[in-house]
Length: 241
Length: 241
DNA sequence: GGGAAAAGTACTGCCAACAGTTCTTTTAAT
DNA sequence: ATTAAAAGAACTGTTGGCAGTACTTTTCCC
Image (cartoon, rainbow over the protein chains, first blue to last red):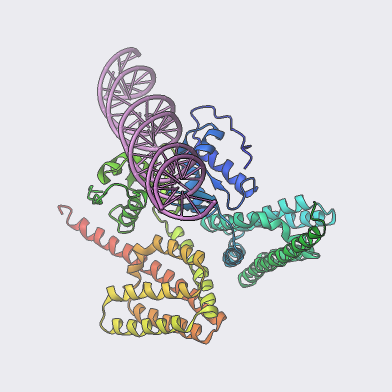
């Protein structure tokens, strides 16, 4: 890491641990801290202008979330996701999101339903305008709205934790041809099921949606590896580069 | 808490944090530390014969697992489960155990299958002998065996964390008439489904099993409250007691 | 030179002390 | 007595430093 973690305006008498936590978290998710990279308490403390304690606690928290891996008496490194890990996480998310969708179909209010409908409409516009950033944002909002409607804070928390693991890869999911339309239609189907109050259907659709995301993730990953191999082959022809 | 947390034989040069963690964890699950009770870092540190740092880290870890609730600048208290919380946890566990069962049905080895079969047979014996403690132990082993067969360490971890929440209440589940037999037959059904490799059936059965446990929990809880009310009514007749 | 022992380095684990905040009790004024 | 301000007690959040451990480099012996 090129020690460019900004030092927050640490006006005294604020609790620093949560801020350190946020900064490190963003750094990991944003891949300024790369998988396998080692985090040194003292170094981070210096860079952030605090003592080791808040850094230490923030690290422990991130560790318990699985973003960091701790090796006793050695330190922590940014967790590296094996394909097996990714598969596991996607499938856990699938059943949890299925449950959330089911609960949402059962407990959603008229107001929340209306909000979902607006988001769907907005997403259609974003697809037409090919505004991928906005679409991503809407996606998050849609998910939040569904999980909120489920009235189950623990479930929401768990899903969002799992989501963070793969957020860095999630982007690539859209890059497959036709996937954007597919996602949109999956969301629409989920919305319809929730609207009807069809709990079984809502659960099935939501789960399927995540499972499809998982497939796309692996297809995309395989493609990326293929591309890498191509590049490697080419570069062999020009070894001076 | 009556400061009877045993001070572990802290021969130097051992890492203390994990030991403190275990002691506190057991104290919470064993209800020596009761829901709502406050944990004071200094006090615990004194009692355990260590400084505040390891205690602090252990507390933070327990907090992230949800066993403790942290109130900034105030401290932590042992988490208290509302009925809503319990319901949530049971239903999350239900879908996760469903997934585990599905994966187990897919990936179980002959050896693991054999082990499961032995456990089932042993459980039947324990039921006849009415040895509830042993039955509980076998139950845990059976679950562990299933989750192990699923080959998904993350899933196993998540389930076991959730299980800890309600482990203190789990006991009461058996006290309903006929529930023991029911549990046994549910386990047998799960075993059969896994043996057949019927993933759908395995998932359905496992999920249903946890959902039934949830129902029993609430029935039992309602009964307990009724009993409490009875006691209260009676005690009003003898106010001098 | 090559490999083993020894010194040096870099880091985590732990600690005691300080600072600031919240809650409780006392004190003082009405 | 009643209420408000002030002092005090009880904790957490944070700090820097010490001790011990794993890794790295150097030194020494063959």
